[in-house]
Image (cartoon, rainbow, N blue to C red; front, side, top):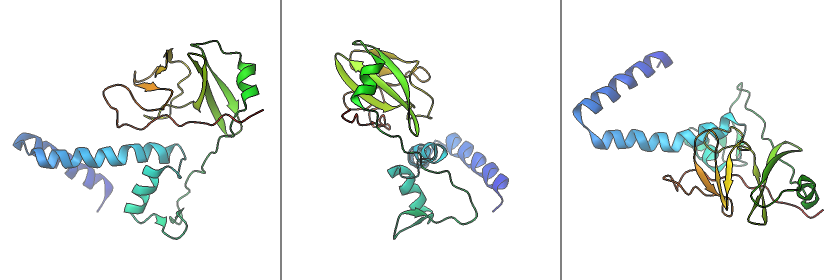
Length: 178
């Protein structure tokens, strides 16, 4: 089926379901979106090793089951970017006081170092919602608030602490000994 035609038909069907108040069908669409949205964000960011991205690629037969490698021929997929862990000396050089955070360049990407109540934490400097940088956010105790979406994360666990606790967590980066 042609893409534009499929999009138009989907829009018509959703409008009809909303008019008819078909809650089960609307829930089905919401569940599909909840599964696909984080996977698409991961794929667009080049994180092919993300479990949600792997699951959705497997649903469509786009992963070779034997080695979990992308099995799409002729479509250039982005390379996975691995971030080299910063060392504790990198964190010390950042000279972070309690309540401060700073983005540093690590081999492979930007890492956000945080000092939450005297404890050092490190995460990829990207919001799990869409990959935008977190370093302009606010850190209050152990809670980091994204500057773009106002989503809040507990830096001790990386998990959301706002109204979407099951949303994708922050991506931790281990701190290696110097």
